[in-house]
Length: 153
Image (cartoon, rainbow, N blue to C red; front, top):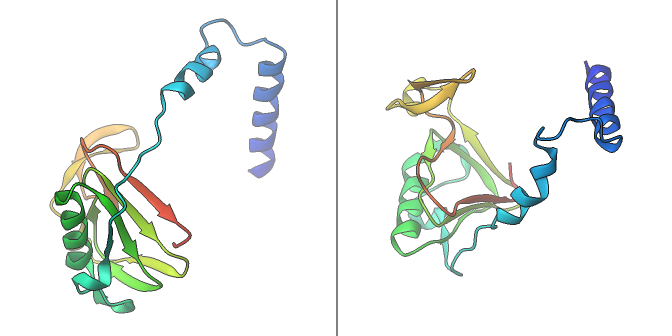
């Protein structure tokens, strides 16, 4: 499978460099699109999830603690929600506007196997089809200025 991917990318690069792609194929718009992309920016405020009750033992459900930290961060105008080193068992989390979810080195978000942790259903896509379904692990809808950063997992 990897060989096929390399061949396909090789052909894409060959056609692109040889200007064989037809005009209007989208490649001529790349530089214009990149100029419109503005990286998110956040106020210099930190909300450590352990201050909201999260325990990084891999057993305790930390979903509400992370949700509370995200809500506090967003309600204050934004900033960084810090996940320190440890393993945090969680269900679905929702990112609000102006929130940078920052996972420090050694931080692990361990998503629950319990399907009920991904309810209520949300508007999403499954195999390209728009539908109402279980929430993704990390979800956001109609929010602005959000990011997931850091060296954690």
